[in-house]
Amino acid sequence: MKTKAFSPSNVLTYATILVSLVCVLGPFLWLIGISLKTRTQILTNPPLFIWKPTFENYAQVLHTDNFLQSLGNSVIISVSTVILSLLIGVPTAYTMARSRFRGRGTMYYSLLLMRMLPGIAVLIPMFMLFEYIGLQGSRSSVVFAHLSFSLPLVVWVMRSFFAELPAEIEESARVDGATRFQVLSIIVLPLARPGMTAIATLCFLLSWNDFIFAAVLSENATQTLPVLLASYSTADNGIDWGQLSAAGVLAIAPVILLSAFAQKHLVAGLSAGATKG
View (tube, helix red, strand yellow):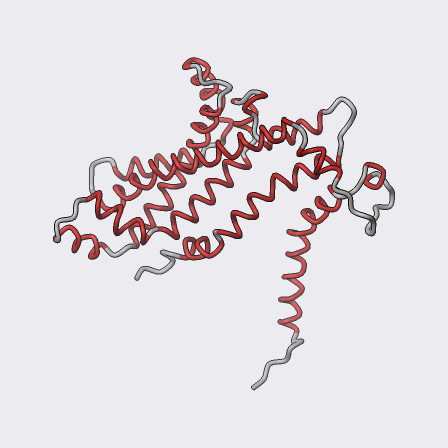
């Protein structure tokens, strides 16, 4: 029996999808539109929906040293956070998933508790600690601060991922003479690639979008893109909406490209472990 193309349930489904797309894409498309307008066109009332686009705002943003410097800082800090989170978190998660030792449960839920704490609760102690050891104002201080919320997330997610992998494969390799490190590097990590890709992307997004830690722990030479974008709203000659929008689009673009590139692994990583095989 053929289903009607325009049944009430289908109409409701399409309407829900359309409303969701408008809510999600609407602000982003509006941001792109403002970035392609001149100051006069932006302040026109009612708003212009048909105009000749200009890339002047992008040219002005890209020719400022502050933007390129902040972009480089964001890339260095985010990539460093991801690398350190995986190097420390993945072996820790594997150990918690495969080994039995006293205090494992306490350590596991303590990491979850650290992830649940609001950033402002640990920001001041971190500031005092980094100032005492001489890291205040450096990119390293921001990286270590980002590790405080990305590392527990890596351990929490990857521990569940490793627990779903069949232990028989590892036991067979151990019987053949493989060491624990060889089992992890040759067998387990390739199988865990989707989960690692998904959690690495999530950690990158959290670090890239962070404002509060970067605003307090960094200086002008080490500030990230979110901090720089906030400074556009405190300019002496008023807010330059065109440059602010252009900088916002450029800040969002790497995240969109990364998500599109890792989409296949993200779907596999987030769905893996949903059912135990």
